Amino acid sequence: MLIDTVLFYVLAVLILGSAIMTITRRNVVHSAVWLISTLLGVAGVFLLQGAEFLAGVQIIVYIGGIMVLFLFVIMLVPVQEEAAQRRFSNQKWLAFACAAGVFAMLAVIVVRGVGALSHPGMAEPAGLGSLTKNSESVGLVLFSEYLLPFELASVLLLVAIIGAIVMSKARTRETES
Amino acid sequence: MEQLLANPYVQPLILTAVIILVFPLVAGYIVLAERKVLADLQVRLGPMRVGPYGVLQPLADALKLMLKEDIIPSRADKWIFWLAPVLSTFTALSAFAVLPLSDRFYVADVNIGILFILAMSSIGALGLILGGWSANSKYSLMGSLRAAAQMVSYEVPLGFATVTAIMCAGTLSMQGVIQSQFERGVWGAFDNFGLMLIPTALFIIAGTAETNRAPFDLPEAESELVAGFHTEYSGFRWALFFLAEYAAIVVISSLCVTLFFGGWLRPFPNVAFLELPLSTVFPVALFALIALGCLKGVPRQAIFGFKLVMLALTGAFLLLAAMFALPVTNEIVIGLFWFVLKLAVMVYLFIWYRGTFPRFRYDQLMDVGWKWLIPISMGGLILNGVVQLLARS
Image 1 (cartoon, rainbow over the protein chains, first blue to last red):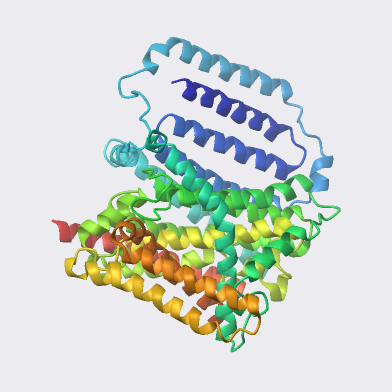
Image 2: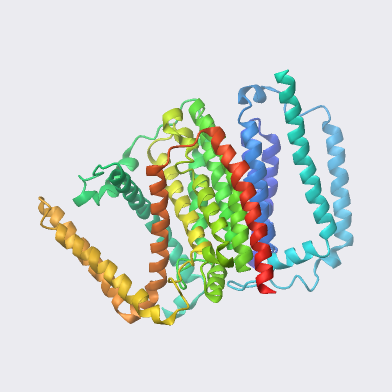
């Protein structure tokens, strides 16, 4: 499908461009806006792969939840002070080395595993109006095959929530006494 | 021509264009209805000057907003100041794409329709937050902070109420939800032996908070924050925020109507003998009565032009009545009629709240959200799940 290929490259440019903008902006709120654009692009790629459920959840969780909380905190930071600070730390070359390592690893995986990318389950993208059972299959896999990791992840999140409450409680008690 | 209409992309595109062109007008008339109902609740007349009984007021308001000077504060972040209202309006209108206006009028029936609406409303919240921040004013910033906290808090009970309804329907597609209510022979709100009334009530409360309407309108509380997040906005940008707010109200109301009140189905969709009285007699009588009311208003108008407007309204409502009297056209528009009627009731409810409830204090708002709505919505979800499992087995 030609249109899928075109859309993929448009989204890829959007994701990479926004990601570069995210780390190069001096203004933190601008960075956050570009990060939102990156996340939207990723949702678009999910949609292109026929994973509508993941696309919806990506937007609701990352943009609706996490980015709103990010902005909530960032908005309270005075922009002028932030912008005056240095943008990049001294670990520039270390960061380049790490990025190159990750890139090399991904390249090896893609080159070696290129045959495995087209399996029969990923058939032609369905046309307009046809409904696949995307959400159902995600739910079924999540609650049968991956039940234990799923439950462990929820317990982990619960621990994090309780931990946050305990820490903020302790601080209020200190200020009171 | 027929070949063109048969193309699967043509009808959705036409409908999209119609929605984008017509919705600003609809929003204008919702504002007029709001002003009229509030005036009535406060024993006033409301707008009366532009057109008979003020029926042309929205057009005058729209013209005024377009011609107003567009002021950008000198120390504002111009780029984000520009982006915020666009983001709000764009996402609010995008959500219309999955609304099932009737069995044949809908842009798209995707299998994540409900998720799509929730996703769009959560991106729309960013518009309010960024708009308030970019204006570089303390009132705007306070409004934004409140908007962010409120959206995050009330999204949770809204989500739980929605999940309960989805669990009952067994699908995420908007048309599918309505179809399942038809098959179960009962509106979502009264399903599970009436237990679904819990999520219904929670959805309406959380939906009011999610659209920043009174009594949850703290992000724009005029008595303490001037106008909240849109304090520094003026002219057309302000109009865009306004449009987004009313679009959000319509979308949340539509979601509520679809999930809990049967969407475009008529009341008692499975009772065959009610077909004639509810599908034909009721709409015809309703529009004929409104036409009669308009006709009686003609001699009361002093200005000749106003008399003409009243006559034109009489004619329009008579035409609508005739449309529902003919079986051929009735079949096309009856679904739309029930959907819009239910939507109107929901929007009236929102206006009624604004006229009668005092605004919450900020800590009370958080109390209600986290300590009451979220636990009750979780309990409602578990209760409904267990009851449904027992009833089916």
